[in-house]
Image (cartoon, rainbow, N blue to C red):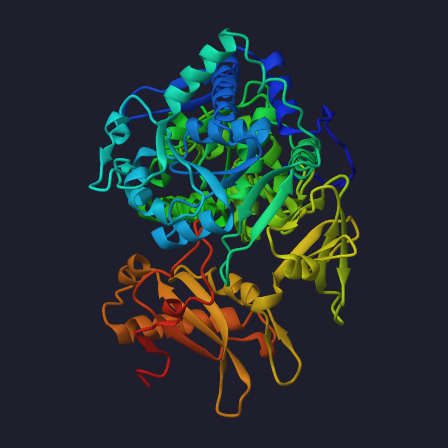
Length: 604
């Protein structure tokens, strides 16, 4: 994927203004191509739905929603990844109203809070989520309907039962008054109306400046903010990203990440539909390898943790089988001869590695956080192309991405066509805050003009990220503004950079770096470490004292690669993984994540 010549070479794309427009275009172009592959029950053969059938269901569902008096309403969706989730999403924002995706892993109380804040009138839920939140929906003012995204195996008819209270009030199966419907029944009702000549939904006009979705941020700190994205915000993100990245004709993309998240929703769900590619719904993280090979997938989007775990697994297997030195030499030869763009040769040289993804792999895409450049370089040397992107929900989300024709392993990417990136308030090293301007900058935060004004200044989105740009226009992200440790001497320490060097050590599974006040009130660079117990046991470390000794050596090794002011001066050891967001980012300001069992001074 890498090239020594960083020149602009863009793919030709079709310009669209609304989500509805690219859906129609793809259905016209590829009516009988599979839009989604999925399994309702684990272990069964893959099922599929074509773009034509998906569009028919969408029009049926949309027609029913308008008949229910929901035109222009805010409607939410939550549940496991499924084509039915996508069907709900696309139906609502293509002429019915505004869609509000909700993280299924949130606590029940937070789900109720977000539904209330977003003024939701209808809530699409999976059968599992119906059980989780059904009895609580009475707490949401103005909620009129709960629609269960049923499938043949879910047996949802029981949810349609009603009963009568002593006062004569009719309540639903969960004891509330919201009307419960099944998605399949609404589709059937809408189709019947279409057959009878109802064209209300099909003829709905959608403007590019219309509000399409409200996405609640799943950040590592603070109250979730409702990011308002227009059709223009989203379609221009998809269109301009497609100028840099092209899915092979007839390609298949494995959907692994939480579907409610901006990264997965825009980059997998929307971009695949726009380019006419098939989305394969993964059965879960533990089924990634099996699903990728069985469904003959070509591409997978993931967060760095997924690819770094794959990288570690490759090396662990090599060490276990005694082939680590052979793998090391092979990587060196591949890098020297620049074999990364010669797939036939790398498949022969690294056959055991390629068995992980099968013969159909085109590339892997990393986003959501910075990935270790060494992982990219070595995976590419093995013939597993991996490219990186950078963005945030407030930009729908992509700001910069490495084009598949030319990329840099340690760069977050090049600003997308139409997006301008600047670095402001630079320090002596050229690092400053990244700001951007373009067609994907959000409309603002829902009912929050104060935070909107702080985040968008004269049209420029203040990302809150620090970084720099090189002479070729590539963007590099060094850390989050809110995470930076500022010493009394005025030095800035980026926790992400320190964590990068620590995570190079096989004894460290996870780490969170923060500034801990010392007796003089200065902040000292401190690392909380969750060890890699298997690797430590292999080295004979059975006691806490032995583990601490090996971790001390690991910290000293990392410190040797950094200037003195950035070095870790204290470390603490915990016995459980950190709490994370649904995109696997450590929640840096969660109180529980600061708990530890012992520190570096415990055994001196």
